[in-house]
Image (cartoon, rainbow, N blue to C red; front, side, top):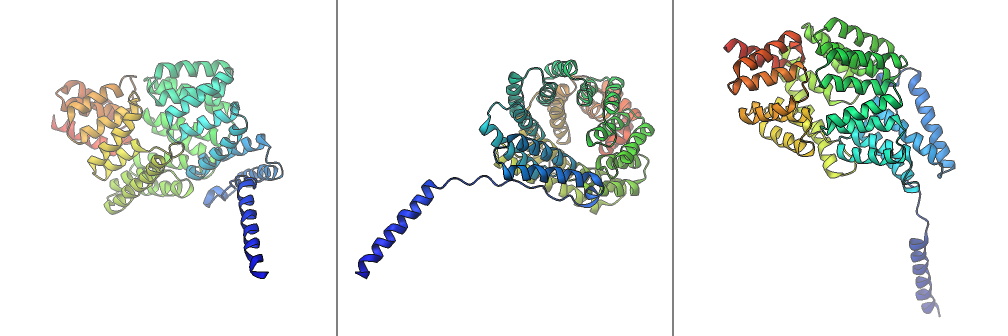
Length: 443
């Protein structure tokens, strides 16, 4: 009797297991929690308030998983936190998870589509960002925010006429800080630096002092003065941004560039290392390469150059492994590989980025410069011609164009551009400055 009972019990257990597997309600996705800020970013009341707000939204979602408004607000908070900390890999993925859950319930949720478009643009998935922004625009064509996204996407894809139209529309619907910054950038790349400065000044005045968006705009205003050759004004805006938002990494980096231009390399190195310790952004490491070289510290420069490559290559791998999320960094990688003298890899990544957006002027400049460094001057001229099609007056672009023109036999035109660049802002790129001066001396 006992022997017959065991098979029956086993059969009943197996049936119960199958029932649990097939009929169990799927568990709700785990809610991503905020990460504690580190270092100087954790100081002051902003992080206390930000963290409390995030945890409040998490508490609402735990008590009511169907609260899509709180889920959307949490996604937006995580996107901003990624911007503040530079921890995009974590916060962008967390925000994307939340947004996908909102859109699963409401596929035409305008705010969620806009946020998803913004995330795609942040990750340099520009075509995807444009498609999402256009989808959102169809739902709500009266939103200024969506026209900002359309402006950004079209700029990055090299569709500058359309970008101008979208920026104009944004300013008609909602003229504010975000609208003015976009006008500023479009004026800058079209060669109107005074107009760009005017629009960025309007952006700063439209914001609230101390907020990250306002101080980002103030730093951008400082950089426009830096590009224009007005270092004193640039330094003033960087210092003001740092006073309004203590430990702001991008203001520290701006002050570092000013210090380097004045050959105060110790201050530049200190400020860039402070920026690096505050926010995860490869740009600070990349800038350290140049400053260490100027300060005759080749070992440190090489260490930073290798670190830049590793940071960017890791991001590129993640992006290639994940079609939806992951930061494309191939353009930046091309420049990083030039600094480690790995010309084949530089060309490989410049071509990858060019395949994604062949009409973008910055991408064409990158490919032109890689070809120049490889000694392929005809191809360099081909891509530099496209890079200059908006009439940008950026001194680094002009100097590179001048070097390429000189190497292809257009000496007078090339030397005029090199001279103009070096007279305006020679400090912007030490390597290009050195090549420009060498070229002029040789003639």
